[in-house]
Length: 244
Ligand code: SF4
Ligand code: FES
Image (cartoon, rainbow, N blue to C red):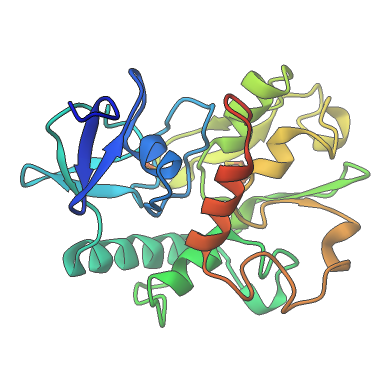
């Protein structure tokens, strides 16, 4: 234990942590960015994107769900992990229809920004071109399932932050897809509001507020001029403790 309290090591730096924290959340609190897509402070980890993979004692682990503990020696910044994260991102891009230049979320999309940060140049893997049902029935929110990366942030956010339980994931494997809990199965028939955390938390262009999409021009959006690490660390530091 250091003078500051309990610590673990991340890429050689001492990172303090509170009991019950995971490695990723403690790292963010300490101003150290570990790439991630399906984690949000204040929500239980989901362990699905694996972008937060780090090495601990020669083994790979997801930093979002790895409990912080004294004596851990964690590596996040290495050429091998950079390659692995790039491949994970290429898989995510090839599994969906992520046509960034034509997407309203371009410049505000964590998947796109993570790919830039990882130096991804192409999708590498064969494109699957999924055809899943699009839902434009809600007056203020569009659901494009072909851009969904199944991170379940909207599922957890709706249930735990909005108290609504609007979303769920149905089916398995490659057939998995987001479904809406409403009598008709349509978003317009659900309790979702455009101001819900569930909409805000979507890291890609799958849940899109309809009208604000073009208000901020390309080039002026969140990740257009700064890296995702810089933007996300600043946002994290501005959060009040316990605030989602
Ligand atoms: Fe994640 Fe967005 Fe898909 Fe919900 S709609 S599971 S937040 S990518
Ligand atoms: Fe850890 Fe997605 S952020 S698995």
